[in-house]
Length: 142
Image 1: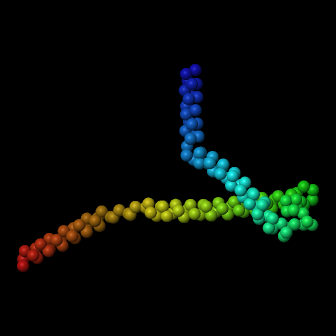
Image 2: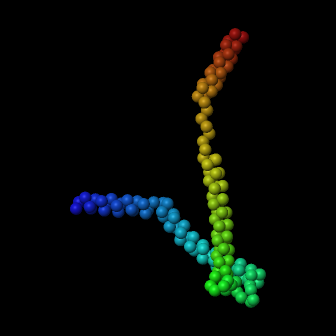
Image 3: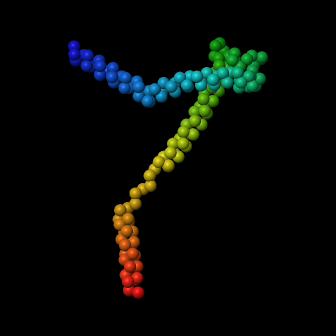
């Protein structure tokens, strides 16, 4: 019995750790925002874009949403969905491109300067010391 209690506590703790990780919470927020964004894009397509395109695609005075082929193949709704997809894909492309550009700038700024070769540093110090010694000897010989 005690063993089962420990297992269930461990399971609950592991599940809490997983559920409260930043990635899972971020994903949940992204899904919610994505759903809202999808509704905005659908409304934009139905209420703004397609009424402008409707005169070009309308057949025999029909609205673009009611265009069908044969019995029940709703081409109008399909066209609206394609326009939705293209707009969402374009927005995602622009957003991801901007994020990648920003990350590249951060990586370039965050890269530390490479450490100099220790033998070169020692050689430079030795050269400086020899120059100072030479100057000291020259001033004493004058």
